Length: 183
Image (cartoon, rainbow, N blue to C red; front, side, top):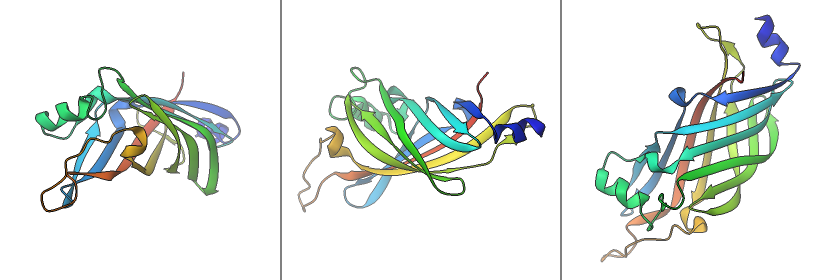
């Protein structure tokens, strides 16, 4: 417990634990319900200073997208959407992190999807550090954001005979991560 107490008085670097981290998304389909999916591969880092989050970076392997439907996954990987052959990663790097309540942050930063970068603000809730049963010090965090896919050039769609579009514009993204103190 002394090690955890020291974290509240120091600058600490963290590595995301890819086996305990996930990026999920949902998008409206045919104006009816949301199609959900996630990315299976995620890496990243975070920094805390005096126990407060000061930096967050995530690197998502865009080729690891899965929606439980191979045809849809292949279409999402194609040039119609993510163009993963040309742009195999999705990245977020914070430029400013502001604590808005205890363990609740707004992380302004740059989100790069399919080669286009735009500023966004993630809403992040973090946990206090704990000592896990294997002796590692861990923190956890959840982040949420909603984006317009069109802003990143992801404009493919089909007009429906009855009106509307096959794919909604709003993408809801939910990130859950665990991180351990960097060695």
